[in-house]
Image (cartoon, rainbow, N blue to C red; front, side):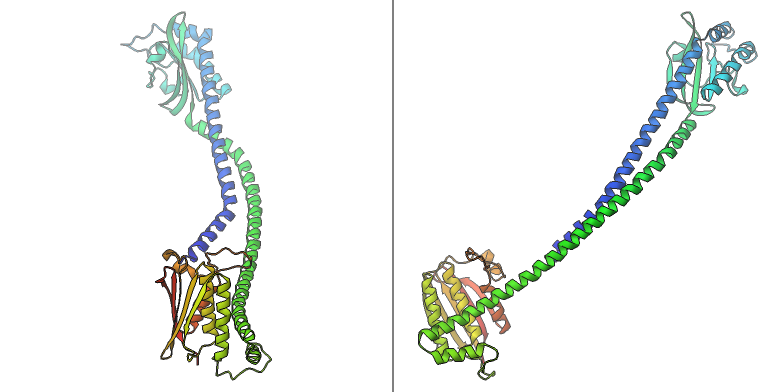
Length: 426
């Protein structure tokens, strides 16, 4: 699970990096289009507001409008409003002007009222002679109005400007544009913007696809490189393990040659090298002289590392190269870790070998016991540059392949105690 989770996260990151350029393009184009549409709508609305207000203010300043509206200001009163018949003369004068303004300026309506807000002009004849329903008190009090209101024609953006006769407000001019017309203008503007947005989206998508393809190619090259590095690492590990095993054999040869046992050394070499005449394959046990030479060679190496080796192995116990490999690596590891005293013992109970290696070194942190047997783990500096952390991994593999197990505890001397059991050689 620990290996699967990082791999899944890596795949997720890779997919995100490949999709990210397209997401950036889509987001950028979408946000830009939205902002442009919002700005365009605001621009249309501001232009429309300015236009209706300018038209209303200009009409309110015309002499014909002021004189005509002033002439009917006394026709009605707040209690008795003027009707269409009473305003017929003023309507006949101002309605043609209102129609002309509507056609030339593009506004929806131009309404002129008297001082009670009764319509003198309106695009719909039925609305003439009726009081406006929307707010007009403030305008008739002399305060212009600009905003959106809903009247008989629907919701509209409108401007209302008072008509004055001198200092007296005698009526008002209302000019409006329907909100639906503003939305239609916005849609037209968006229709002009859409091809540019789609073009940007297409170009951005192509560019992001090319970028994603380049990223994917880069990932594939990295995958190939990682696979090559992994193969190289496995090869290096295999070579290091073979070097440990070869080192064990060199210990044996060193001991035999040091004792002048040339015949036994040659026999040992013939067993180890293909093409030479080996001993019978059914007998994998080492001769007593070979075992003795191996122990002496190990004792010499441990001594060179500043430690004293104590060995308790019954000479009648038959051991093979696997047992020698386990003992050599455990004793060498203890000496290299800083121990000054190392004790090695091996007993045979039935068909099972029970062995142990004790030292007085600094010991292994209990939190690192499980990691100690991991390939590549080491508490010692690698001064050779060839890699360390191989010995204990080799030991565990050797013991496990013989159906045994190895445990790590604290030695009575204060250091580390390795205990193992494994099937005896046959």
